[in-house]
Amino acid sequence: MLFNDHLEEIIFHRHESHETEELVIISGYLGPSPVKRLSDLPFKCKVIYGMYGEAGIGEKLHGALVNIHETIDNVDIYYSTIPVHSKCYMWKKEGKTSHALIGSANFSTNGLCTPYREVLAETTYDTFLPLDQYAKKILENAISCTELELESSNDTLKKEIFISSDICKISLLDRSGEVQNAHGLNWGQGKGNTRPNDACLVIRTVHLDTFPNLFPPIQDYAPALEDGGKKQRKNDKVEIIWDDGTTMDGLLEGSVERNGIKYPKNFSSFPNKDIIGKYIRERIGVDLDERVTKEDLESYGRTDIEISLQSEGVYYFDFSVKK
Figure 1 (cartoon, one colour):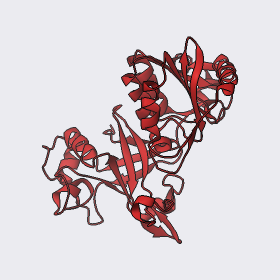
Figure 2 (cartoon, one colour; figure 1 turned 180 degrees about the vertical axis):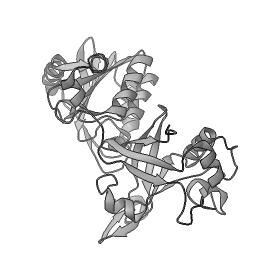
Figure 3 (cartoon, helix red, strand yellow; figure 1 turned 30 degrees about the horizontal axis):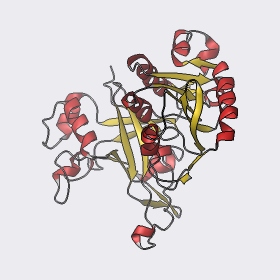
Figure 4 (cartoon, helix red, strand yellow; figure 1 turned 90 degrees about the vertical axis):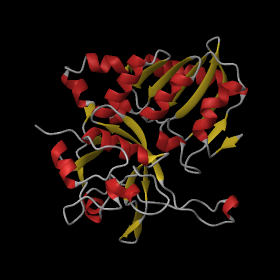
């Protein structure tokens, strides 16, 4: 059977129809949100970040994964020292694979939660032994994520923790130098079907022109049967790691055209837009449901957020006050 939608839910409920003592996940790239969700499962989980051996890992993503590894008892996270781009999900009993899915979906929000973007397929019994042997070989050439941190004083390992060179400053003020009345941090303060704390970060054309690698172009879904064949715009689901260690799911949404290509124009939180609005209000000391002003931001200590890319679909947001 082939799956191309609701992949995250399929993975997290597969054990209900297959007796499982352990889940082993090999993924080219990882996102912290689904890895953290593994704590909901009633068995041991091993997660292997496959492309560490070639691409290294973003410093802030590494920190988030180490925190999960150290605080969630049933999750162990490894980095493969040999480049592995495959995506394998193996449910095991008595140390052997009894069910497996393979395909193109990374174990990240971006890889699992965008319909039609990726696929996973059930494997047959004759693949179980080769999959076990494959996973064993990768684990033999992997290190625990905590090993990297313990040895990070070594210059070679330091090079393998990279910091994105593209750091984009997103202003929380409009062009007049004020916080928007009914957009940006105050999106929910306008009229319409919004919550009072709904908020977004505005991506402007200068950001798209200066940092083309940070914001992927928007593509259309294939025609959806339930919509009568009408194409739907794809809003990419992503993950956000904040400078204080908070993680949340995000959404690149809206549409602006540059040189004939459509790009997102807003960063919001997912599944609700008020998650980011509440977070920022609490952080800068503004009561929930209240309008955010320029004075509130200046009192906090800054009026912008620095954004960088840690991995495909995983962003780092720095809202720390610079000293």
